[in-house]
Amino acid sequence: MRQLQIQNLKALGLNLAEIGLALAESNQDATATLAAHRDARQTALMNLGSLGGRAREALMAATADPELRPLAIRLLDADAR
Picture (cartoon, rainbow, N blue to C red):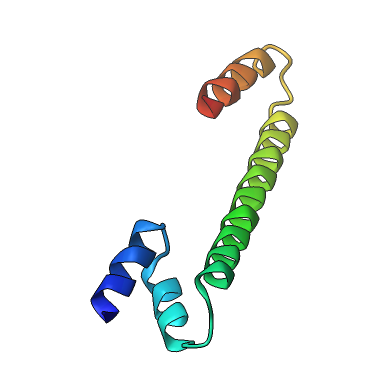
């Protein structure tokens, strides 16, 4: 039974730490586990978006030469794809 629970949680995308927490808390239901997983992923995505914006700002600030700015923009656009 426990192996089936582990397989199901893994199939839903939870990492091993999250699976361990979910199994340790026997009173926690699947909805709460998935909600916590979703919230953690949303926070991670927001942090990545914020990091990308800061990297873009830093590159643009570091590129003082106006002739190099178009190259910096192309590199950032290519990296975003």
